[in-house]
Every structure is written in C-alpha cells, then in structure tokens.
Image 1 (cartoon, rainbow, N blue to C red):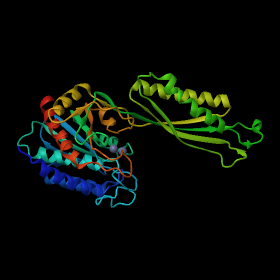
Image 2: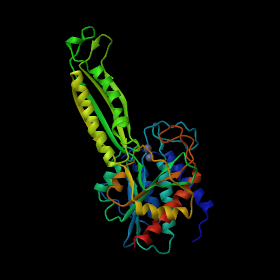
Image 3: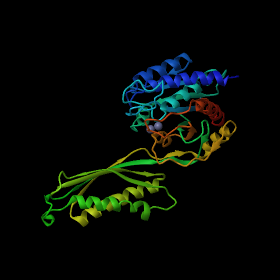
Image 4: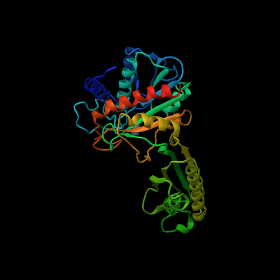
Length: 378
Ligand SMILES: [Zn+2]
Ligand SMILES: [Zn+2]
C-alpha cells in the first residue's frame, strides 16, 4: 500500500489544529470523545467504549488474537494559551500544553493506515484514554474493562527537546513514579516573644524541609535518580505570634520500587523524628501516584528493532515527570516511547508549540509497531 506522506501530513495537520483549538479538561473531554468516535466509525472501527467510561474512546479493528493496544491520552490543562497561533485554544483558560492533541492525531493517523490494510493478523485496539493529567484516566479505563484481553500495549509522549520524528526508547524506567505528601505540624501557639510557653511548628517545619533532602543525598544509591521537592508551605498569620500549626506539601519522584519504598520510609522517619525533636506532633498524608513507566525489556527490543528500520532511534534521558500509562504498564507488557516534537519550550508551558512535522513519523511508529507486534506475538 503506497501512502503519500505529503497528503497524510496535510490531513493530520488539519486534525491536530482542530483538536488544539478545542481543548477540554480532564474527565470533561465530551466533544473530543465525540470527534474521535466519529472519525473511528468513519474508518470502519468497532466502537467498544464501555458504558462506565464517561469520556475516552475504545475501538477495535481486525479479529482474533493477539490483541495489541495503542494508547493516546486526550485531555488538556487549565493553562491560558500564550502561543499567538491562529489555531490557538478557543476555550479560555484551557490549553493542549502537553501535546495530547499531537498524540490523538498520530493515533488517528495510525488508525487510518491500519484500516487501509487488506488483512490484519489479529486485533488492534485504539485506547483513547481520558484524564492523564489528573492521573486517574488509565485507572478509569482499566476499571471499566477497556484494556481487558490485551496482549501488549504501546504508547508515546511527544518530546519537545528531540527533533521531530526522532524516537526515544529505553528498557525499564522511562518516567518516574510519583508520590505526593502533605505534612502538618501541630504545636502550641504563643506570643513570639515568649517561645518557651509554646511549641513552635514553624521552626520544626524549617528544619524538616532541609532534613528531608538527606533522603536523596544520604539514603539513596548515588546511581539512582531520586527527587524530593517541597513546593508549598503555610504557617502563621502575623509577625508577633507563633502559630499553633504549620503545613507543607510536595512530591517525591523515583525510578525503582526499592528506591520508592525507601524514600517513603525515610520521609516518615525524618518527619516524625523532627517533630519529636521540636516537641510538636506530625500528621503525614502520603498519596501514592502512578508507578514508574516500566518498559518490558523483550517488547522494547522488538519495538526498537522495528523503529530502527524507519526512524532515528536514541536512548533518551528518563524524565522525572510522571505518566499514568504506568497503570497499564503494571498490568500489561508494554512499551512507552518518546517521539520528538521539536518544540520551542517544554511540557505545560503556555507558549509550547509542537512541530507538525513529527505527526507522520508518530503515526507510522504506532502503525509499524502494531503490525510487528501482531506478528511477533502471534
Ligand atoms: Zn502533562
Ligand atoms: Zn502529557
């Protein structure tokens, strides 16, 4: 089948600009869902979106085993776009600033290519998942049965700092496990001039914020990348009163189960130890987010071999950002790639512009690897 990639690029560019102009927030992607469903139906896909899934689309083509999943996220961010593009967001305060419009377009491109195949030896399932940014969409799809029966699933994130169409692949951890914490120190409020009459949570907080950095510098293997960031602190209301409580929150990023467990254990020990030292009481709320995006080594070898036949393939630096594709990669053999989008800035920036030149390679990446995996896993 000969595909004119110039025509394909024009077609995909038009789709992406439309999607870019009509972004929707996580779990509110109703118009996007309708648009994708119509496109897939036109191409002859069976729409099998579970009723429990309010947004997102699951669709299949072909029949029998194996069943290969191709995943794209579909949500946008609460960011006011500042690109000045003629196809900038028409939805005030909402923007495709993570390039999920790029992902959807590439998957629609692959869907069109697969639909034009005379025969498929197995089934390809399109998984357009909602709510990646809030890290609940992959779990919603999983709970609704949307990935049941898959033998493998692949997906990608556009990477603004790679040239358009360059593929980044690694076995193992590509994107970090995400944990979130909040800590409240409960003390005893008093006059600022008479600290001996109270128990000061502010000084305990200051000491603790410095102390938790030792998790990275003193507890973890220096070869392991670990991030501990305290991002938000609150306490007190004026200059001459010591408050009765102080609060902070932040995040921990790790690339390995053992490092993740160690970080949590040490965090709790240090916070409680500091609280004891300063005579205040610590209340810790620990929220586990997505696990590490963990590429199956065998599947990654297959996808890398296929990708090298068509594209420049590089070993990227893992990203300490999280990705809820991890919920799929915990259940199903999977590969997550980076695909270059040659951007002018980075993810979640209001001025991010991705390069349409990456769309055809990204569509091809899904397409070639879907076919290769159908053969390999037959
Ligand atoms: Zn994002
Ligand atoms: Zn994203």
